[in-house]
Image (cartoon, rainbow, N blue to C red; front, side):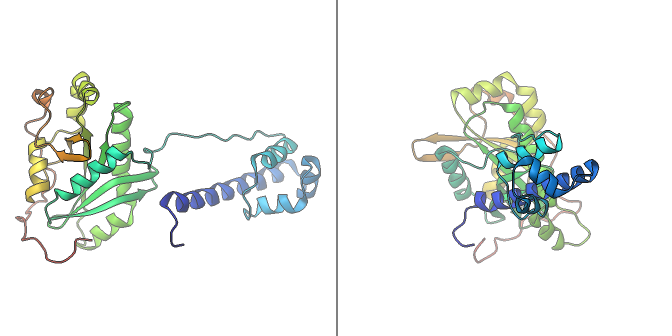
Length: 281
């Protein structure tokens, strides 16, 4: 439906999925106990129609109704919120970072913002760059803060892996039958006293996760050279202006990787083609 947000669409899809799972659980429990739906409805003090709608997943019953049905069956109702792959809400700083990043891209890269993923991670990748020369997809995550660095790295890994299950990956694969696109990662961090302190405290963690030289990655983004591999990049944000830094900030520059495997070129890879004309989409 026009005008609906991504969160609204995903919430409807997820609530329907949960309703189907509850319906399956309820059918199994009724079968195990040998009780009839009508008897369960009487014990729970709900209408038989309500039990029927829950069994057919035609209605998302309230927690109060589900709790009554569960108690009538002698079972437990459990509802929890579990960590996913990052929240889909960007603060204003992150939005400026993404905007500045997009403005810096060479035409070789086709930007695909907010790519939804579902398995093994559930969420959205902030930005996917599709390589117009070699079969490379770069999953980009933007962080204005690094409160929980291990979790940020986990989310980045899980969402990059989940990219392989998306239509974006399938479309990239279909462009060159028999060749599977490479998936690479970028973490773009705002340069602040706090974020630099986190990287300074955990240098081995970040360089192991993002071994490609940052200068090579920035050059690939701006000049269209081959993608060097997973990389940690930095952005300077001042007021409403943001710009991608060519290297790590001076305070942590000595910790930055200076060599690493080239991850974007396939065997027999081609040199960058001239920029294609027309909209990048």
